[in-house]
Length: 195
Image 1 (cartoon, one colour):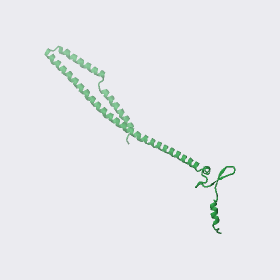
Image 2 (cartoon, one colour):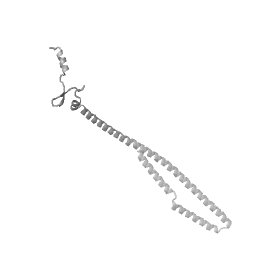
Image 3 (cartoon, helix red, strand yellow):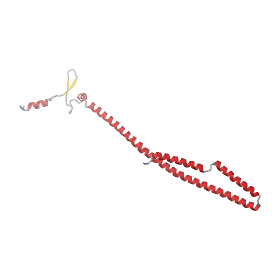
């Protein structure tokens, strides 16, 4: 079972922190560098004191050796520091790329999980609400349109609705529907009756 991308990201950050702390413990800080410089300076001072008691030729040779040794030590320390820093930079670049990759994976996983579910839920709710409103509108419109009151008031005498507008003596009107229309009564009378 693979770990959660977010947990992997947290583990990578913890690993980087421990590596940086380890590098801090193994490298010299300013106080330690000053202490080392003091030790080297005392050693050089002791060597100078010892050489003052030796003949001049030997002193010149010792001075040249001492200068060469100081130069070599400085070059070696510089190279060691540069290689250490290059190693740290390379490790940090690799870890940074891993961290970025894990963050991208975690972001994608989060969007797939939360975005998919919430989008589906929101789309379902919006669709349901829309269909509910549409059904309510259609039902209300059909109910109003096909109501008997509306049909008799505005469509009396039209084909499909039927009826006949009848005016009364006082000016009022009503829609009368024939149970048997005059045409049907005439047709029935003309037909021979069967017993």
